[in-house]
Length: 96
Image (cartoon, rainbow, N blue to C red):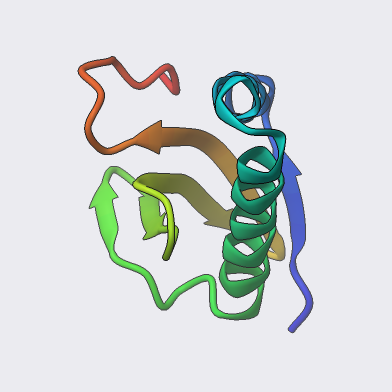
């Protein structure tokens, strides 16, 4: 089954903020982070029900090389990415 992926505005803001942070350290690191995110999305698209439900109907998938969790839900044939969350930062999820 082919799933459509929608990244909501808040999740896109999380991605841009993280990319900017890595770019300030090293532009190549930012490219690696973006590639890891894309690979994570591809994996979620391939097996969206494989990952655990953490709360409500939201599932999480951890990137393999960076400490980030992709928070998403599955609705019929659509995957809705709700947040990209750093596992070590003390911040609140903005998905409600």
